[in-house]
Amino acid sequence: MEKFFYKIKKDENVMVVNLNGYIDTTTVGIFKKMFEKIRKMDLEKIYLDFNNVDYVSSSGWGTLVSNVAKLKDKKVNVYVGGMNKGVKNIFDLMDLSRLIVYSDDIPSSGKEVLPDDERKTVYVDERSRALIKNLVVENPFAEEKELRRSFEQKAKTEIDEEDFRTILSEMELETREKRLAFAYKTLRKFIKSKK
Image 1 (cartoon, rainbow, N blue to C red):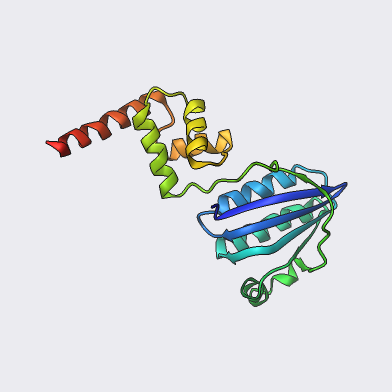
Image 2 (cartoon, helix red, strand yellow; image 1 turned 45 degrees about the horizontal axis):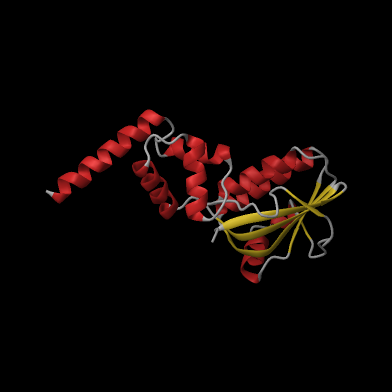
């Protein structure tokens, strides 16, 4: 299960973004990418529905405030709403209503866009990183595309090509040579431990 994902509905120049999970340092990257996609669209109003958000960390609030400011510069009206008591208390304590309009009157209509109905946004936790390492050891000659497909099948989720490339880079497994070296070192350690 993802720690954070979102669904976007759009009706002409009005967008509703349903947020789910929690927004902290491990998921704020997904939250930022969401705003990058939104800023490229021609909009008049955006409603961010926090109804299914359990927690927002300071990095999440910072990302929200900075992106709302960027959208306001583009003359887009941004509304937030549907927050549970804990999330709303922090919103009020930080006096964010001075910067962002709070409204529980969130439209429910609109056609779903970005990401697709079937697509899930992936948080790559330690278990997922371990899975990627295992896949590399199993087939160190696999191309990135093949590795991503294997990951999606085993993890039962989808991951954006660019995101997967970034993860491989963070793990220092972005080239075939690095994956081969990693597989070789891992197998050597394993063989030594069995002696």
